[in-house]
Length: 131
Image 1: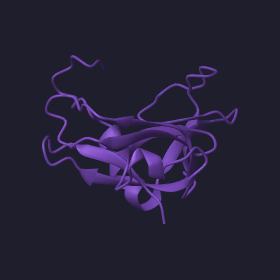
Image 2 (image 1 turned 90 degrees about the horizontal axis):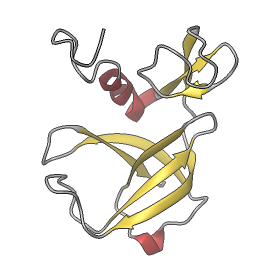
Image 3 (image 1 turned 90 degrees about the vertical axis):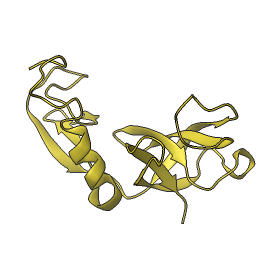
């Protein structure tokens, strides 16, 4: 199976993961305890093909962030907005911090993952929300 295979949708695996993220997220873990995000068939750390789903922690901590003032063409989110890399223990996820300006976000802030539709593209958008 390859990305050019016309019978396999490009988002196979990702769509299911994104559907689950807003409710009961998960990551994949190999027998050696390395975590990664689906879709995966092989552990990127050790090459193990023995992967299973593990529950994603319900909250994570912002590891780094950036306030975007010029959005890519057709992205659909009006700047300024904050993108962040959030540490969920065994994995890190990149997304947009919902309803927050750069001066309201700090490294170490606790957030929870969610998914919402991108109004411009119809694709799923990973967002982080603080409680």
